[in-house]
Image (cartoon, rainbow, N blue to C red):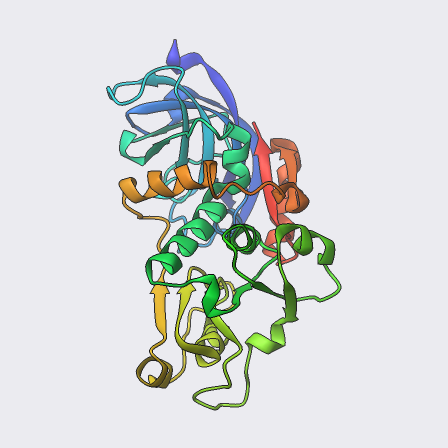
Length: 332
């Protein structure tokens, strides 16, 4: 029965040196080996998915391939006793959508160790409004708090505040009582959405991209969540007040980090790396539970659009051109 059951998936094919996207009909027997078969209800679009769609071999080595590093859905079959048919689950990170066929598909099959049991207070759709981006933002906030960051220390700046990670970070920080500075690439874009998410103020990206060459700057914020990397991350460190904390969870600007040790040894700044892909399952479940409960963001619809598999191609192009805003969720 399984081998003949068909479903739809977005496939990326390498043809004459070009990467062509199209929706194809597949059979369950085409899926990789795994413990749990999941009928996907929702997925979401992330920058890593866009890279996979254009043949970035640092993300996906072999084609044809189905991208989609996020999925939420219902277990259809399981050989692992931890999950039963009918369970509502979340699958993000690990190798999903990278070299293992991902969530831009009506079905996925994955190892049981990759699966998070969906919290009761979270719908399958809400889970993908968060997705990897929201989980990364929540993990960043979690690590800031663990490092001792408090609202009393002063404002926290969030770069890429209109993006998926940034929007959720702004929302959670505001909910926890922090004054949030939103750093965006265009001051004429998204003003009302950022206010509803809880940003107290916003700054142009040039304020987080110092070109003076000075090793340290006058303190402007007490902490930061950064998705950009490169000189922006260096600037955030240089302009952070003593004993502040800066998390790094992305490199959409650059993977380089140039600077000096002075922010660390003269001001006690902590740089905290965020790895959402290989986060231990116990911590992963704990952070998802927080997103479903005390950290739940009620205004994310302001920066969320929903599409189906046939409409996804347009949003992939926007993300490749770095014109994407907020979250794009895919209803399967």
